[in-house]
Image (cartoon, rainbow, N blue to C red; front, side, top):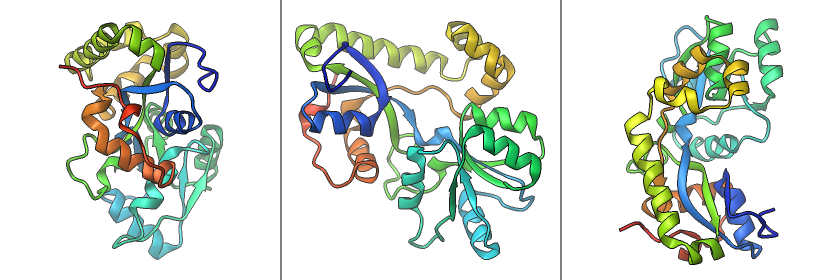
Length: 249
């Protein structure tokens, strides 16, 4: 749909948007809505204190870290952030279903899992310990907001050209609303689809918000962080300024 220019607004991973733009799709990134803190480290190790400590302990013990879901962009981030002064994790891709089965059978002891799945697994396996997120591993740029950007909102270039004030207003309202309600379940849960609330559970969703609060940033304000993230996720391809919607006044 993006490559065909169908639709006006899309939600997706930033590397997917960048790849589509490089292939000529009329895509402009307007907002960042998901960050690397979404991915949480869970472990049955009773002594590990942080992701960095877990890396050292797993390296010493020859153990692996399950990365959920399979094909997660967090895999590339983690691989890029470790190995220099910190042992690389031995990574095993796992589906959410296999993660639960592996924990039940003792085949998995350590995981990196996105919210709200992380909170759901802790509910089912209370012996799991949460010891930090992907954002707790230094990216080399301590000013990166909430770690590195992973997903966001993009618009069709023609739509932005025709209605720049409308798109700017939409982004501003998204930012303002999430700043007011970033971890407020009473405001957020009612606007989620009913089937999501039923499938995941409202208690799990509320707990998840405390560990992965909503945060929206204008893409132009996170431009350099986006470029650093894309260098990891998409390779050394130049990202033109035209990929980013103009900053709001």
